Image (cartoon, rainbow, N blue to C red; front, top):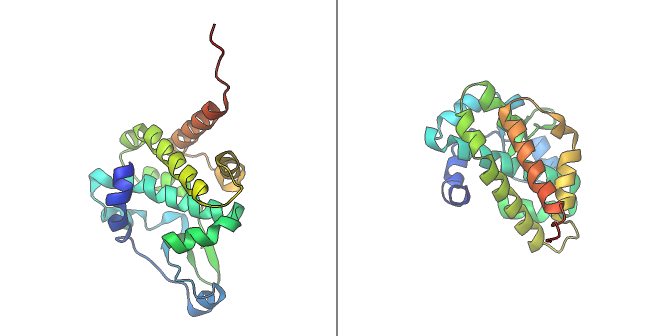
Length: 195
């Protein structure tokens, strides 16, 4: 997962269809060079994923989910970290714009390809332990690099408490939530005393 994310994902990410907000919204966003992918409920999933080699689609979808979840969690719940993250990454936003900006639920990135048969569900589901481990490792590194008082436990809690996290449809969303729960509970379980 890590190798894919740092070697192939940037190239694959550039293959998506992107849309820019209109000039009025760009001015409102202080001329941030923001671009969107996906559209409502990732209606462009079939077109977007058709550009990604089939063997890399599970890695791509999980990486896309990770950057979107991170971007939206930082913006919504840890705004003091967002500016630096945005400047360093400049990742596209998952959503669309018209008269305003609409960010879509990050979990749709897991649901839409599954619903539309665009991804191998079993293979992707089997990658979830590795993916969640990578996600937590990268999040910990991000938080350690900042002078923030936000720790990993608070960060994960903000994800779980977000209303978007209530979406629970599909095998991949449930696999992600199970693995995240197992990993974060494991981190807080006291080691048993040896006898």
